[in-house]
Length: 334
Ligand SMILES: [Zn+2]
Ligand SMILES: [Zn+2]
Image 1 (cartoon, rainbow, N blue to C red):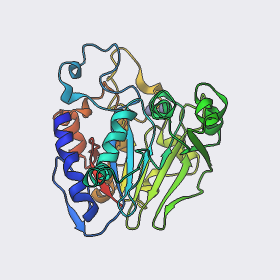
Image 2 (cartoon, rainbow, N blue to C red; image 1 turned 135 degrees about the vertical axis):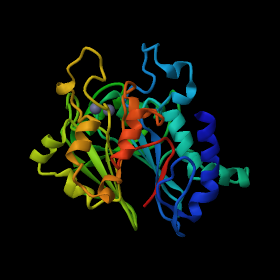
Image 3 (tube, rainbow, N blue to C red; image 1 turned 60 degrees about the vertical axis):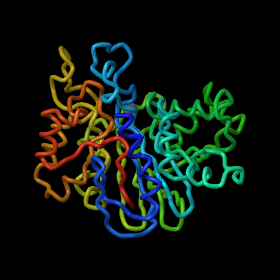
């Protein structure tokens, strides 16, 4: 997988700044129009703990690196300015930041004029959803043991922001100004450029240390939705958000696909698991038009989820139902 990914990412800087792509799957780009449009790149598709997980030594990915998956993250690139943002700071931050900076073409530009750049390779901002291990612990790489950044903007909702500012070791990142926290409020947009903005919203999900956010990412032409973790669509209904209505307002939706179906974890009743099973989401949305269903790219797949193998019967079933599974380094033009 890594070699495939590297081959793909090498092509990204050459192609992407010139074109606005639709979904890129398995290397085939659908070119929609020529513009320097911002774009999203999927930096990881696994549940928090990655695939394979620690201790699950029977998982085939230990012997076959092509089956390994990084924790869920999206990158955002504005080719007009070379600016980059990340959604989530995962335990796989090192690889994901390299992949994002590569995709943005910044390294290629530096190499083209060696010695003339003083650019420091840091993201222009990091948007966090919540305080579970796969979503924020990558911030540790901004600290003095690693990058030692200065003032990287970290966007977080109120409780998440306080959690970082008031608890070690994260408070040191604030004290040493490695990060600069910008508090988000639900539905209040963050403007990243004239034609790029991010709108946070609240979703229901376990909230031990923080509230849980999702994001709308609005570009000049298209909008993406990012909800990696949610307890259930019904709970979100009760908060006044209907996923069906929201889907009509976006072009792509990266949604919680943690578990595929009941029975995935042997010996466990999964009805109390705080995630909508992929089968449950597909059932709920089965009456939507194919155009609406095709916007959905399941993400945040657990290491047990058979659909994370594109060759599996479960992945085929998702495709037959008109939905999709996000793949590493796929690109979506905004
Ligand atoms: Zn998660
Ligand atoms: Zn979570």
